[in-house]
Length: 292
Image (cartoon, rainbow, N blue to C red; front, side, top):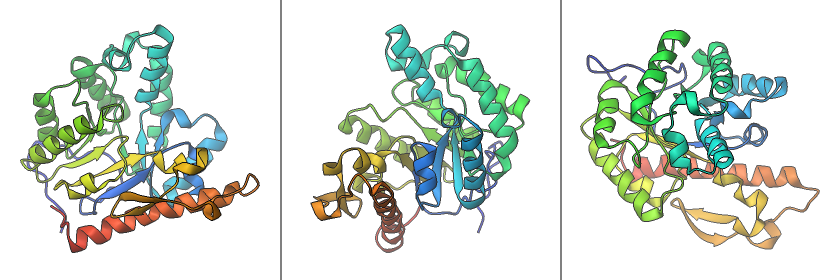
């Protein structure tokens, strides 16, 4: 049965979004590796679409997968912070007009949204500027581009009143800027979100930059997550792990490693591991961790 939205709640854009789907793991990373994976759900950032070749890959992914389009703001704010020697949080909080490259990113974002919006799973807003500035940029997206993006809530910066505002106005939101938070802090924030989300039974929450774990599996909320950590094994072979119930319990033995001339084999192995994680999530939700 399709979930009905209360009056006043906006459905966010994305023709491939299924509100009745189970908890979902999106693979993030560079677009070439994403294309080589077999995962049905992937996150692609606007800053990863650099040329016609990348656009062709995105076009194919939109046909074959469920694609969540990331705005690229995290990368933009990081680049600005490094160039001006400020913290990343300070970079994220600055008005869009003061961030290097924002206008260029807007143009690229607009082009991609115009071409692919109906074929995407979802579109994340350009969440630059904190609570003071994000709403006006979101309104501009809705007015000029004709879509309703998924708003982004930053628990370290925005305050819980803003979470309640977003959760009461949209059917989906993103929970962001957790990647740099210490693990205990991240756990408290996500658990708080899971408890508050109970007041919004229609709400889908996407955790940005969060890998599946026993903790996220146990949390009673509807949603998804993404991470690029599945690529770690390509960079550092000793970082490859075997999984059980979304926890790492053993390293892959050396005979599972790939040699320098077997790079494609390495990509396939880690891709299969990521798919196994999604199968674990599905089975656990059905057997022991029922969906809200």
